[in-house]
Image (spheres, helix red, strand yellow):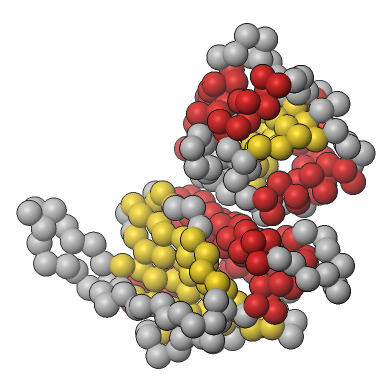
Length: 171
Length: 121
């Protein structure tokens, strides 16, 4: 029988946020060849970026939640061209963009999982789910702690969000 | 030398194949999961496998276990390219029969170094 859901202490997620930020910077530096510029993290549900490409990866274990990546079509196309060694004038197809953004999110979330595992947190992660379009809304989870990490990638703004969900404990 | 690249992400397959081409390896076949990888292996000879871990249908660990159970494939060089890099992950991969490990994100130099190490065994 499940007991009432425990709230997530935002302070307890701070090491996770620092680790996720570091993973995003490393992945973009190594794979995209871009030094990401950082901005102040934003907590809670206030900010929902205007993005056309959103990738999500779930994790579960000693902690559970989501890593969510947001980009505009132009930002996602820039990432795709960099990963696939395309010319600056090449226009990647929507399936290429979806796969590239899924893979970059997989690398960020996978690095995050590995670093947290080395600190004693054991998680499994899902394969990425990518949503593309111009008329969709991501419904916020009601019982989790949400932190949005804004980054500047050249002329583009991208976001990496950490959602840590509460877990009902089994009696 | 023929490589088999197994990854469910077409992006990652292209990244690895581009890297192999730059290193002078032009003969590369690909598969999007372990099951397809097994089909490619029965179609013809392969000298080195580069595989992901997390894939639908048949993951990299099950794929390598199946490869090692095939006649004549016990010593086929296998490199795993994955984000799963916790100590327990590496132990599990080595036990399954992986010869060396590349952690994503990676540079072309890392791929070259690991291929050279696997081929030198």
